[in-house]
Image (cartoon, rainbow, N blue to C red; front, side):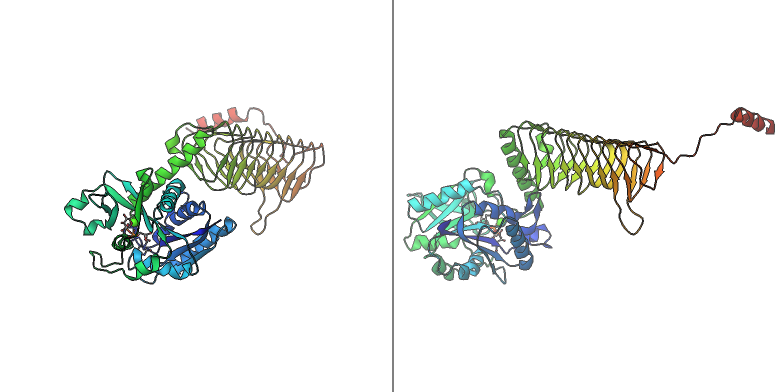
Amino acid sequence: MNESLAIVILAAGKGTRMGGKSAKVLVESFTGPLIHQVLSTALKLTPSRISVVVGFQGDRVQESVESWLKEKGDPCKVSFCTQKEQKGTGDAVRAALPSLENFTGEVLILCGDAPLIEVGSLQKLLKDHHEKKATVSVLSALLPEPGSYGRIIRDRETGTLTAITEAKDASPLELLNHEINSGVYVVDSAFLPGALSRLETDNAQGEYYLTDIVKRATAEGQTVTSVLCGSSEEVLGVNTYADLHLVNSILQKRIREDFALNGVHFIHPDSVVLHPETKIGSSVTIGPSTVIGKNVVIGNGVIIEGLSHITDTTIDEGAHIKWSCRIDQSTIGENAAVGPFAHIRPGSFLGKEVKVGNFVETKKATLHDGAKASHLTYLGDAEIGKDANIGAGTITCNYDGYSKFKTTIEDGVFIGSNTALVAPVTIKEGATIGAGSTITKDVSAAALALTRAEQREIAGWSKKKRQREQKKK
Ligand code: UD1
Ligand code: CA
C-alpha cells in the first residue's frame, strides 16, 4: 500500500447534458457505471485511502460503489463525502477535506466522468511530482479540437505552467491553445486546504474552480509542473451521450486489443463487445456480433461462431458454440457443441462432448458426458445420463401450474421424437421410449415404453371418399 497517497474522485455532478435523471457517474458503459472504471484504475495505485465526493443522487452513487467494492473484496478504505450544492470542482474537493484529516502526502484528484485515464499516465504524473518536489502537478493533453476544456497557460519565457483558464473565461488568443487540462492533479496535502479556502467565484460560471489553485501556487512561489498525457483520448470526459458512445468504443477497443495480443482471434473485432474481466484461454476464435458479459471464462481452443450473448458462464476447452446462442449462468463442458440457435438458461451443466442442437432450450438441466439433444427440445429441471439420446420434439413437462418437478433420464436412454415426459418421472438406464409417447410413470431399466395408440388401416378409404365427393358435384 502507498501510505503517502490519497485519491479524491469528483463525482457530485448531475450530468445535465445527459438528461439529468441519473447521476452522471452512474451512467452505464458496457463495463459498468463510469465511476467503477475510474475506481478500478485508482485501485491499481494501491492508495492508503480514496474519497469519493458525491452530491446529486449521492446515496445511489455510494450504494453502487460499495456493492462493487464488496465484490472486489473491499481492497481499499473508501469514504464518501457529500457536496450539498454543486458549486464547482474547487468546492467539491473542499467537501473531501474532512476525509483527508491526519493525512500527509500526495493527493491525486480524478474526475469520476473521465473513465479512460490509464494507470501509466497517473504513475508518470506522480513520479514527476516527486522528482521535481512540486506542490501542484497537472496532467495535460494536446487536443486538435480543445473545445470546452480548460486551457493550460504557460509563462512565455520559462514555459512553466502558471494558470488554467476555463474555455468560458478564456480570451480568443487563449482559446487557440491546444494544450488542455485533463482534470487530473497531484497536490501536496499541506498546500491543499489553504489554497481551497482562498478560492473565489469571480468567473464566467460563478463557481469555485479547482483549477485556480495553480494560480495560487504560482503566486506563492511554489513549484508547479505538468506532464503531457500519453494519448489524448485518455482525457475524454463524458458530458453527453455522444461522448459516452466514443468512450465505450475506445474501452472496447482496448479490451479487444489486450486479448488479441494474447492470442484471441476476432473475426470482426469492431462488432464484438467484451467485459474487461472475461478470462479467455489460448487459440480461441470469436466471431462477429458476440456479446460477452460479466463472469465468463473461456477455455483453450473454444470457437464461438458469432451472434451470441454469453453471461456468467464457463466454457471448457475445445467447446464449439455455433451461431446465435444465448447462454447464461451455465457450464459448457469440454468439446461440447451448442447451437445454432440454442438457449442455455441458468443452471445448465453440459458435460464433455454433449451436443445441444438447434432450437433446444435447457434450464436447471444437467446433461452428463456424451448426451445429445440435437433438435427442438425443452429440458427443464432435468438430469440426463451419459450418452443418452433425446429425440427431436422432446419436452420435459416440469410445471403443473403450481410447482416444478424433476425428470431423471439415466445413462444410455433413448427418447423417441415428440415425447412428453410428465415430471416427476424417471427413465431408468438403457430404456427406450417410443416416439410420440406421453410418459407419466417411471420406466424400468432396458425396457421399451410407449403410450401410442395402435395404428389402424382401412383399405381403399381415400379412393372411396374421392368418388363420393365427385358424385355430389
Ligand atoms: C473541468 C475543468 C477543466 C478540465 C475538465 C476536464 C474546472 C473548473 N474545470 O471542467 O479545466 O479541462 O474538467 O474534464 O475544474 N464536480 C463535482 N462538483 C461540482 C462540479 C463538478 O463533483 O460542483 C465533478 C463532476 O461530477 C465531474 C468533475 O467534477 O466528475 C468535473 O466537473 P465538470 O463540471 O464536468 O467540469 P468541466 O466543465 O468538464
Ligand atoms: Ca467534464
